[in-house]
Image (tube, rainbow, N blue to C red; front, side, top):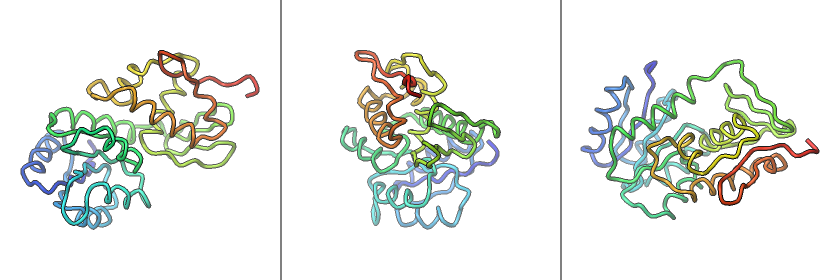
Length: 228
């Protein structure tokens, strides 16, 4: 795994050890933090952290606050852990910039599979790949998006979603297919997760957001208008 570092943040030592053991078996280096304040401190002491697994309910500073604070300066992928399965909590996590959301109890193998998937996509990109679609330009190695030459800030998951649309340009994609490919086969989400992300992605892309068409009763398709 190229010695990639993962910061595991949870106030329960038993949970940290469980996650840590599975990650170490996969070849990752694990840094631990037992509360939100320590998480912030350790993140800035280790600038090369590749991903954060972040519990929501913690003393001193909860996961939402940590996520919000980190997003001011970093796009590091964040996987949120929570004991709640409330949809409003999940949407809050995405609004704050979380990339994945896993409810406890969960399978450590599924967590590691998601971590593998995220890091595969962020660390194994073709260094020369640059894609242009109409007024939209994507610099994959730099994880940068431009619309009419202006840079657009996207979360990791929004970036992945856009890449998937672009790589399947002109093809109608069902919500199930999008979930399976962007959120992985083991993600127990539903259509609302897709719709929330597409809405935010369209908004951020401005005029280029019109390229993402809704296919009623099915899902979405990326298609250029005649004027483009």
